Amino acid sequence: MDDTVFPDRFLWGSATSAHQVEGGNVNSDSWLLEHVEGSAFREASWDAIDHYHRFADDIALLAALGLNAYRFSLEWSRIEPAEGLFSQVAIDHYRDVLACCRAYGLATVVTLHHFTSPIWLLAKNGWESPETPGLFARYVRRVMEELGDLIDMVCTMNEPNLAWTLADVGMAPREASGRAVDPMLCGCARALGTVPEAIAQFQFAATERAFETKLAAHRAAVAAVREVCPDKPVGWTIAASDIVAAPGGEQRAAAAQEELCERFYRASRGDDFIGVQTYSRTWYGPDGPCDPPEGCEMTMQGEEFYPLAVSESIRRAYAVSDCSILVTENGIATEDDAQRVRFYRQAIGGVAACIREGVPVLGYIAWSAFDNFEWVFGYGPKYGIIAVDRATQRRLVKPSALCLGEIARTNGREIVPATDDGMQPGGEVSK
Ligand code: FCB
Image (cartoon, rainbow, N blue to C red; front, top):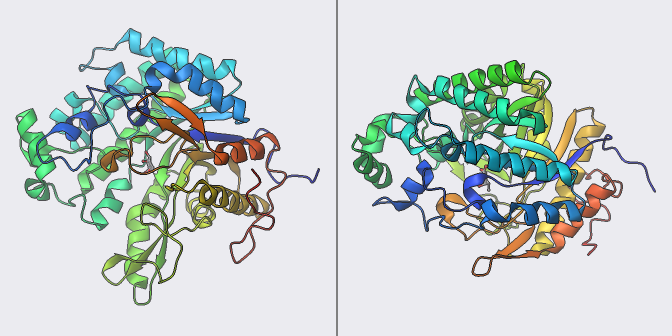
């Protein structure tokens, strides 16, 4: 068998996040946003895919594919449903999940905050409150004390920068005053008895105050993790857009690159790794994001099919942050699983090329293990390597899951770095 460029103990995994798969997260602020008058959510999460009760079978399935890592998140609103009151039952639940991963030989990559916060935090100004970094660090410390022995890698928070990507497409106001005209945030304020300006929800808070708050919370969380578990690698995960300029968009693209990504990469210096999360590349014209050139292959989410975006993002994140890289999300929304297989093979070829160039890449984690609740888009987009019939909660393994499992089992031996035109030699669907 040919040799591989992937180092020993390279992580090959797939990911989920608590709110997107568990079901019944009634204390989370996303649940509230899903149900208020004026909600932008197409549907509510409800039972999701009942991963909360089915985690053991789900983890067994992922291990059987041949993967060696599982990235998932802990739900703060379950662990601390009321301010200062920690649920031992919830903590014990996550201990069972972690122990299950151990039993199946899966490394655990744990995200401590994946978009959702407890409703009580949102009611007190959420991700703009000067209290939030300290409250987050208290939760992190508790979790690390209770569960740290079973956690292999820690992501403090997921995509603190996403809000600015949403701001560029008009989905998140850059000033708190802009919330007063957002029907969902107004509905939320009414439900909480406060004013819309005070509704600083993690995904939608794109003010400078939110930037400072997220940064301070990350720093406080890293310090807490290092104090309790000094040997655990810790970092955060960044929506690492591959931003490219359409004709005339050079300046606008450079400004977006700085606001959306590079200031976050710089803020990662000194962390043990940076989580890179990339789906496609984004074209910028003189007025902001614009359509890709005519004739591009597209995904069902209206994004360009461009598997090499992840390698471009890896190079840039590494150059600016000087951190080791863990690909914590990469994938494609599609109903055509053969398209997904093509995507993964080419994307992983791009990762191999980065490793050949000397970039320290620690692992590749696909989004997502399962078709799940895709936030405002509800259950429409299909990112999973495993489908779920939500009427029966039956899981159905897709060919892309077998393909990733095979790549994992052989540590990427059959993957050849992608060529300049992005084509993966021998990249035919094998299953
Ligand atoms: C990322 C999120 C993840 C999922 C994918 C499609 O921005 O981190 O939860 O929704 O996009």
